[in-house]
Length: 265
Image (cartoon, rainbow, N blue to C red; front, side, top):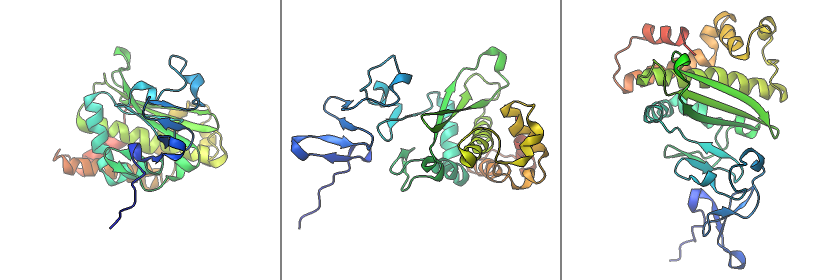
């Protein structure tokens, strides 16, 4: 019995041997594993002036993965951040959130997504990173930065490695806050008309004198029904409850809700 040749190999990309080549099809570029380079210039090369235009994953494939040959997915480097992300991703609501931004065939924490998420299809990229925010910001658990580049929305979720709130639940809470509140609101805003102008929810018209981050906070606290219906309340609470149960942390549901409601940024 003859078995079909398995052509989908490294990173789940198809190996092409036509014309004597051994190149992987990354969609945007062809990758030559023999030399560890793409045969084409990264269209985001201007953002990475410190390196060659042809490198794979910024020459660090342990931390980075090239999804389509033209973008970089960054992993978390701090051990506590990694553990928190694993806990967040292991929950149903956490994985659901990531799935909305994942590309088809992308593997995260050993899980391969079988289809591209709705936000990925709409041109939104999501990155999780961590760094030391400095001594003056030790009360800050995380932050989300949003920008539009090359007709795509770039969302960067940062975890503070120097926070006073460093328990597993603290870190998961920060990830949940930055994901289901800030990243969600930015994504819905961009989905509305391709701009970051808070046009997706009329409640924001009352908050235009506030910073983007504070608008999200005030919307959640004061928009009628948000505390019961917003994904941050529903999905976010689900994340905390599941982590609390799976890691036997011993918090009551009331205590978890108070943490979610009295969030620190």
